[in-house]
Length: 236
Image (cartoon, rainbow, N blue to C red; front, side, top):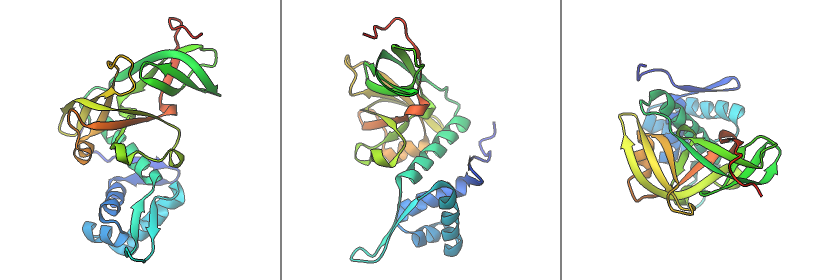
């Protein structure tokens, strides 16, 4: 597959492409729409209009602060950061030559809310989509569904969809031209041996300063974690 393919996300009637992602990242880097327009050499009115178009379809993406001692500015919402993470995962899936790894964790179902069940695993409790009849389950986490965050920059729980969060430490990193496979030793693992693999873009590697020994928090939406009944695990 050509590396210069057109990557985009389709949300209702709006298409989010590389230029939109570059715009949001420039707003984040520069702290204002005007600064982003200058950095990208775009017209400020057109950039502002594009933000409005995206927000009409997706919801609030930019928080604006007016005047005051700090002079005002703009910052990204958790919704915007989630959108950027989704785009990065899409790029990783299509540009990556690395295989998609799967982490499988097993344990009894200890709580349930409809289709979502809480499974007590060696790496801690995992919220996943699990068959209603299962008393125990094996849950699978794909590496291209994992997002990584600096410990001090984990999205607020009330600002995002229900997520599993796994504090840990980078154990190893295999970087290609476009993407990297990152192995994470999970902090909550009872025997210290449970490992989660994430597939991220090289941009994320640089932005997060990923290297062995780096503390990191992995997150995965509950709806992206699928479980099957595990008859070999005691559910009592």
